[in-house]
Image 1 (cartoon, rainbow, N blue to C red):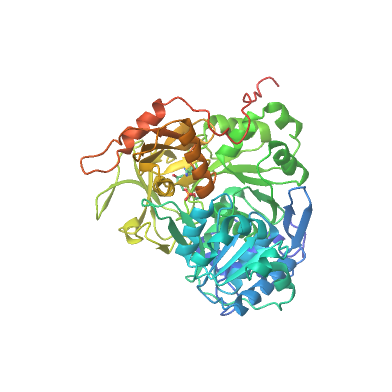
Image 2: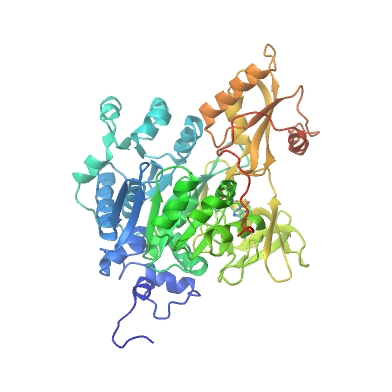
Length: 588
Ligand code: PRX
């Protein structure tokens, strides 16, 4: 029974909702998250300053774990203050509403300060993958036309500095952990010194439609697609986190995604803070012992990761999992690729909690289809969340037709009225209007819906490669390798992989004067790693005399894919983790 005069709980205060129902609707959430009076809707207000204004500023917002496990903590009030100072720094460097600010800091406290600082000044936060090489980073900086870059000194020095003269839009560089060298030679500024010297700026009263963040995903041409989102995304992100994870302010939420992936923006930055939780930020790379340790020692209650990560943990065996089994977890979930039932079963045994698959895309901005506690079907994507209308369709150029029968395969389409639906594509990678027909957004994913209304992922309708949850456009990889003088023609396809689901492999025909052989193969693999980075670079290269083509001269990917499946695995770069036998729990 609720004690008399106890006042609203923190959960109720966060959403201003007396019932704290997970079925809250978009309208209600929108009202709760907006600024008072005419203060508009701004993600920074909704997720950070709203809590400070309501007297919750002292609550913990961020626990960041450095590479040597150094702990840094920030309260909501401290995050509000630092981001307001950064907003002032950005404004002083000419950044205003709609200007793009690129961020390359990896997972860190500074990432949060950067994102919320951008939103406070009305700028568009544009985070980049730190695993990308100089080539893909440059093309994304060019496409975004970013005016300011916030980066760690190390990443800037290694990946951007040499290209700075070719980036005329980039006017200001703010460096985290600057040791002075780049500040002197490159005219860069020290991020922390600039913030310390600034006075906090007020939050700009943005409208829900104003642009807030930009993520790049792979396009069907060589150019990546810049997917633009507005401030109203916070409504769907905050609400879906309530619906799927049941987030309440006492939760400790850990999302393992890299900042370049929208999963980080939506569910490491925005959703948990909008719900008043504490987020855990791990600045280091994957390490199973460390990860189990974080889950246990930092008392994580909700964990959001990828199927690849779970499969990697499986490879380290059940004994390790068992050593860390005492934890505070309430629920774990994954996104990015299908979560196979074996991984669900293993995850649930290893962690002792429900392990839920969720489906969404960079374009949808928030989870649209998910398994929810109590109604999950292992191996499926789950069901559309309340407020989301999903259909399995077939289409022609101007109309969509829902498929009639259960289990019939078709393209997944969503009603386009989600508050987090993207608002534009930047760059030439795709045409925004072609993504919609008759008020439906077309996802490009092939699915089937079973008789219970559960959706099952079948595959992509296009050539995209899914590797460790990254969506890789074969065209971008091909363009990167075409810069090598040996390459006459190239076709890149996904080869099935037990751990990463798929890996990009390249088929190459050579220019005259170059000889196919081990030396050239190693040279090309190294070239690809240097220019594209580890995520996009092909894992294997096969030389072919000629490329299979369609009658219109297009590379026949289906034929290459069949060849890739038939090729024995090569001794290339070892996969990210040593392979160990999957653990068994049935011996308990
Ligand atoms: O093909 C689907 C796959 O990932 C694509 C979206 O990739 P991206 O925009 O990079 O990710 C954004 C954040 C999720 C989808 O079109 N995908 C995502 N989740 C699932 C999935 N495939 C199967 N099951 C999932 N749960």
